[in-house]
Length: 200
Image 1 (tube, rainbow, N blue to C red):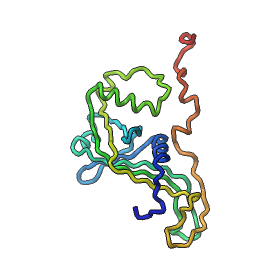
Image 2 (image 1 turned 30 degrees about the vertical axis):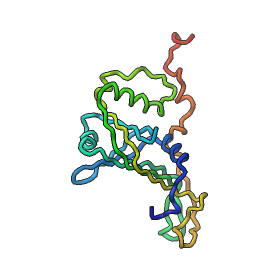
Image 3 (image 1 turned 45 degrees about the vertical axis):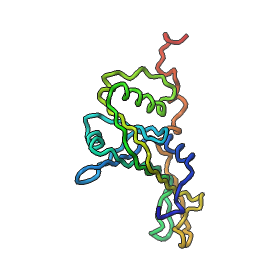
């Protein structure tokens, strides 16, 4: 990493960041250009859990070459200073190089999806995944082989590149992005689908 002052090495915080984010970008090998797609994901046990249709482009590319790169980021604020080159952003960013274990048998897909759902539905209020749905999905466990992370946050003293004068940034925060922690408690109410006749 060229900007060592921006390296983010607090792995506990990085894992918390990945648990809270909703969308990752997955880059796979393709010809003549890499193929990149946005996917919902769950991060657990040093792996990204994702899924797709078993009949689509992503599935075909991963079957041909199971090495992928996954990126997750969050913009925090716009930074402005008098000099044009000092227009920048505050952000968090994680990049992981992964080897994919692909599974498409129905029972394994269902188990994979139940693990993935723990992130989005910790209240476990859903009915079981049906065979018809699981038979259309391929599950990917993207095992992290190398992960790097960067953040640029002014409060951490990350201003200009080392050796350059500290820029007098003005900071304009973006509205809070879409994260699980941004949802209200009612989003995780285990009784939301219960009818009055179901209530004791």
